[in-house]
Structures are given as C-alpha cells and as structure tokens.
Length: 415
Image (cartoon, rainbow, N blue to C red; front, side, top):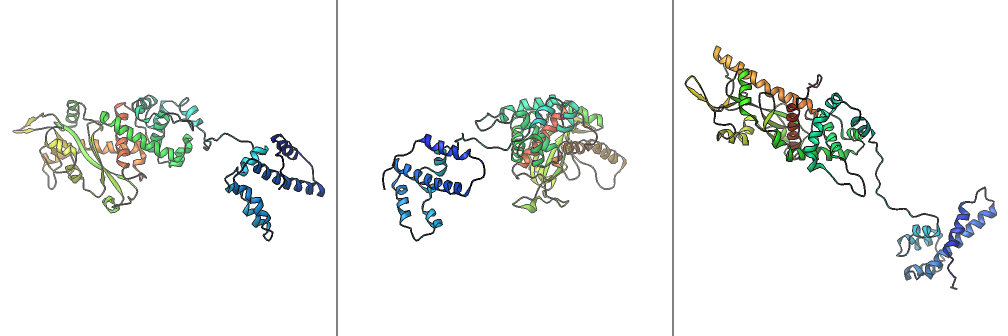
C-alpha cells in the first residue's frame, strides 16, 4: 500500500464543518459526491491510524477486508469493529475530527425542587404551622437539631451538597408524624424516597445515642409521688402498661408477632409519671408475648426487685409499711412494689381502691394515645426492618417527652 501523508487536524475539521453547515436539498449528483467523500474519509482515518503506529491488530484489519471478497458488506463490517480494538474508539476519532466536543464528566442527578422547604417552611411558617405539621414549634425543633447535630452533620462532596441537619430532622419528623409514603415525603422536600428512609433511620439512631438517656428518665421522684397523691393514690412512682405497634409481617418467625387481636405487632412497655411522660421503656418483644412475661424479663423489673429504681422511701398505712409502688392492670403480677386492681366480688373499700387505681392508670392510656396521635406512623404498619423498628419507636417516645416537657399544645383533631 502506498504511503499517504496524514492530513492535518485543521483539514479534518474544515472538511466536516463545511459539511455540517451546508443547507438545502441535495441533488442526486451531490448525494453521490457526499457518499464518496464519506468513503474517502474512512480510508483517510484508517491510513492515519496506520501512520500513528497503531497495534498490528488494527493495521491488519484493512488487509483482512480485502481477503473477504466472498462476504457480504454486513459481514465485512463486523470484522472491522473499532469499538472493540485496542486503538482509539469511534468517539475518540469523532472528537479528533471535530464532530463531537469532549465534555467534563459529571455526576448525574435528577433535578428536584427544594423551594417549599427553603422559602416557605423556613421563612414563612409561624409556630402554629410548625406545631401542626412537625408536632413541635420552631424553637423546640431547633433545640432538637442542636442536640442531634454531632451525629447527623455531613460534609459536602464534589458530587453534591449534603443535606443540612435541619432538613434531615424535618424529613424524619414529617414521615413519622404523617401516614405519607416515602415517595410523597421525598417529593415534598425535593429528595429521593431512599433519602427519606435513610433520614428516618439516621435521626432515630442519633436520638437513641444522644437524646434518649437525657429525656426518658425518672426525674424528680418527690414531684411524681405528690402528683399521684393528688389523684388519690399515695406513694406511687408511676404507672406501667403495654401497647402494640403494628408492623409488616416479618420474614422469619412471623407467627410470633401475631397478637391476640390478630395482626402483626411489636410490644412497647412503658412506665409513665403523673404527667404522662415516659420514665422507662422496653420495646422489641413480639406481639404474641404476654405483657407479664415482657415485664419479668425487663431491666425495670430487676431494678424494682433490688430497690434501685426508686429511693427507699416508705410510708405507714395502718400497721403496714408501704414502699414506693407502681400501678398496673390485672395482667401484671401482684408484688410488694406493684399494685393491681381487685377482681371478683368487691366490697366498698375494695371498689374505692380500684377506682383510685384506675384513675391513675388513665395517665398511661392517655400517654399512649398522645404518642400515636403525634407520630401517626405508629398507628399504621411500620415498613422497616425488624431490627430498626425498636429504634424508631424509642425515638418517638423520646420526642413525645420533649414535646411534653416543652409544653407543646396537643391540637384538636390529632386524636
């Protein structure tokens, strides 16, 4: 094959720019000329590659083309596949000729709008709107974000800007406070539905690690005892009960999670004070397990037995010394430090005892009611992994206590 001097890059670009900017309807003769120019261009490219000392595999391909005289054009074209060669690709050749311009590689992400959060919620909403939608006022929300910031703060990357702590917490609160789907919440905040799921778990874990030990605690025992005494029951330190949180059917041991009402659930056991704030919680047992069994295997039971949960403070009633006690329903065992109602035929004194005990027990029932009204996802089937559900439930209990301690108004219509 005769040696051909490689054309300059300027000649390549001039040729293709002339073709690219030509307009009008082409005559048959012009079409024939264009086809011939295209074939010549292919020949020029191949010869140019040869002149650049391309691998022998590429150099041999034109020669093999001449040896395939009995093959169709389609079969011959399959023999010369530049995209699979070790030389430059078709795209690289087109960039060289000026037909395609190289661009900087960038991370692709779907465009989403965050105007609602940035311009409406943060700048326009007042406390009543914050309370209605996030279950807490703006000031309480910002205090919670400050507490969670060490665990939730992320660094920006070259790919994208990280979500702020405030937005991450707001997504989690919105998802837990409403029955909205992950996709709906994502559209609301301008993020993907996977980001919503991650924000819920991250915020819940941050609350478990940084907040729950501060807010789910016994507090001032003397104030609690005085509060229950005002309700009619002396030397009482709390009321205990359990509630079922609906969940999806677990992958393993699903029958263990079917409760007596016939749906899949996970148990939340809680001890509350006279104002309905959680002072001790135990969550994670399958719904089929009896409340008494959950209680006997809890750390609270052990502490009450060892008299390490409450101070050793006794009062004398008649000729009996009475320690600080907790109150429970008939499902719980009768203990020196646990009082439950009389059953069967009752006299007047027993009936009065039951009335006062029941009046105090209303506190825990109302606490569970407010908990599920505030965080309505606890009323529906939680669609999380079995290992993450207790973390989310415990985080909701912590948020309940924060709202109660800050005096957040329980709005009408949340029941």
